[in-house]
Length: 405
Image: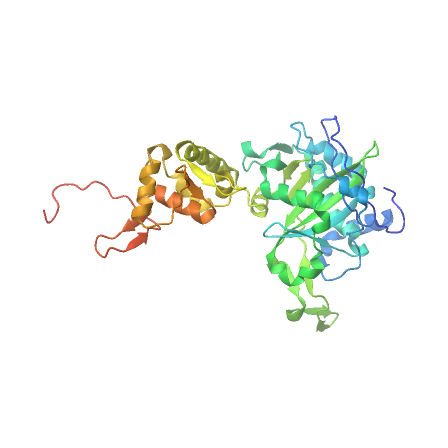
């Protein structure tokens, strides 16, 4: 990509095959945004922290340049992380080419649906500085002070440590990247969804730059966004000099300026553990427990799932169910036939197929199944009514004779 004086839309390069060098792999590329000149980049980057308001309602700069037919062939999977991924090498490599990097922005909502969003040419340097240079600068600077990059699943809360995990481990992040890489034509512009800002979960910056062999490399920086940080035109005023004036934009946003998450060649680099877990709803420990319990359940019970569903996928977002399963010893729970009889006694709509397998069509069926395992349904001997027990405490064995024996 040329570093020209005038901004131009960049057409994406064809996706590259993984490079054999273990330090870095090649990845796919989609549309690129406009470039500003080097002088503007360097001068604005130093003043980034004073200018965090991005007007989402403006359409001055396009980051959704027209794609070509050749780009439709760019359907290879985003590269998987190599065990030898070196985040320090990556940071130094990006720092060397920082003036030749293009950036495109996406907002994504709580359903992890991405939306294309434009930004003005005047913000190009600020976008690069806040997303890219903050991250690479931190890594380069702290490397001399003993910064380490450790495996997320084997570490927790150490000082001077950033974490890494495979993108394939973080389902929501992987889905988000897949949609951007493979479903770009179907991604809406956020212009049509400004009134839904309260549903926004985060912002994702996609960076592209040419490698030494002429191919294009891509990485992403993700940050969480709080809808409470937004200013809406109807209820906000601008202070201009000594006087208030009507707020001119539909929505303005205070951008987060801390390092949170980077996604590089199939590796997720985690700068802030709590924000990463909240941004992508990823709880490794709960997931490990859920996977283990899912195996115990499927080993003991015959279950039939709706097409596309598995017990693991249903448990992934159900922390209360995982917590309830964690308290159960599956091997000691009632056998399948008794569980089905129990459901019949409670007059519950637990379905079975011709083979006697319990049918799980959705999360409601799964909740009923887990509640049955936990014996959370009860018929009162006093009034004969059925109850679902939300919380119960096992009483200790009585001592002595009953009071009215």
